[in-house]
Length: 277
Length: 333
Image (cartoon, rainbow over all chains, first blue to last red; front, side, top):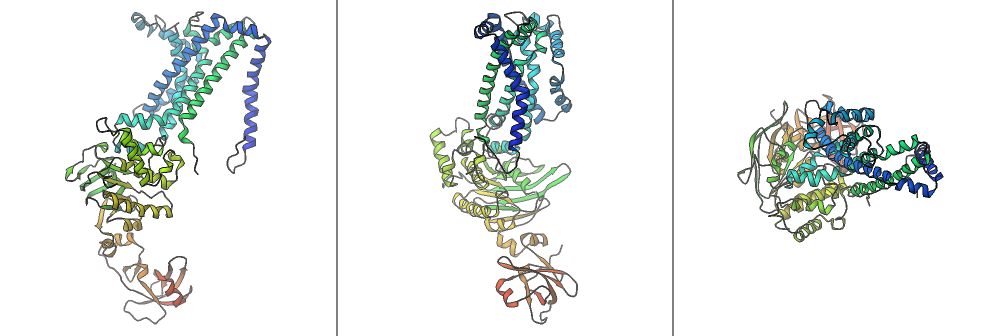
């Protein structure tokens, strides 16, 4: 049941510390959420989470996070590729820029994105005549979440690209593969596990994101209201059990999705297991 | 496997020069590898042998000079157009593919018109798996194989595309001594079966002399000598080649192989004979290594004698003996 690898001692201390800190920081607060939700009783919980406004908020949250995570994977992959494969002036500046969303208070990002994309904003004024509305729509939420999620993808993929063995590409091209075939059949499969990790991180971060979204979304009930905002709203009305109920449903769904992503990721990196017999 | 090499060709390298920055890795190198020949590029690290191999493969381009396959100029052709099988020192296997898929790769990436059907691909790969004796491991990933097995997969992968020439970069460099010896004999036999012009790079003179039909000895971007193993060993062109192909010791201002040093208990007789003291005896192995110091000039001399001779002489460290050389060489350099 317990795997004890190698001759180095340290399994039990490592294991005990992991359990202790995960309990203090993650498990106990989370179970408190479950307990709080339970005080409301099952019918009340169901009533809260199945109300049309909450369901709509879930749809907005999961939909926008999913769209943003997919977009982050595509854009993040290109950025990581450019940073790892090419030399260009200002490269270290771009590299540092990638981390900015980690450091910036998310509200600042939300406010600046809103003023950029608002109908009279720098970018919004050109988009509005084209019929593209960004601020106060799900598209705006998605853009805010891409901003937040992008660095996760870049930073997950970059080290794997850095480690990639150049000779493998040479081997493929001397076997007759075109550049596109080298990319599709040799390079991309090697990056896939890291891309999935980046996807999972960006997606999870998007679900929980609050600060940057509330400004750009406009918070129209049934349209651009995200689940975390509803939780805050419930808290402000002292409906703690209701807030906990919304949180619990979100937790269960996110846990299930992350578990699924991990499973897919595990399959995509089967080749890394070493079973020397 | 008679036709695994497809139509084999000769390789000709003419006046190749190559710089990396200000460093000149190849200085006017020319050589010719005949159709069906197994050719070794031998030299110490930094001699330019791997650069030359990569240029032949099209993985690097020369500053000047040309490469010809069967008299046809291939200097500007890209690696993928050259139909060259390249085996890397560190295998460069595709680690997300099974052994089977690694070998099949070169066939699967062919343009649709020339791509064999699935059945033919399976046939071909299974045939190669049998050749490298790894049929039971077809579904393993490279990380689950030993070094020797990986190198065989890399070779099978290169052979699958029926290359016109086969190029191997230090093919056994990363393997342990026993596997190395096994594999190089196996490569020799395989080559005799396939008969495709092959060039391999090595820094191990024993490997080159044992396996190759002909050897080129390289130093500092130049070819010092080219010839059959016996030819270069018996008539080395200069002191570098002599020293690189075997141990040597300096004796009376000339170069001598340690096994050509004669030790005896008699009084000095030959014209070049001298007195020396035994400083060290290494008696593990087929030959006994003896290190001596000359009485007159204090020069160190290395000698190798048979175990039989060693017992007969019964020498010990500190003994005072008579030393002379059977063959010696003078190089003007």
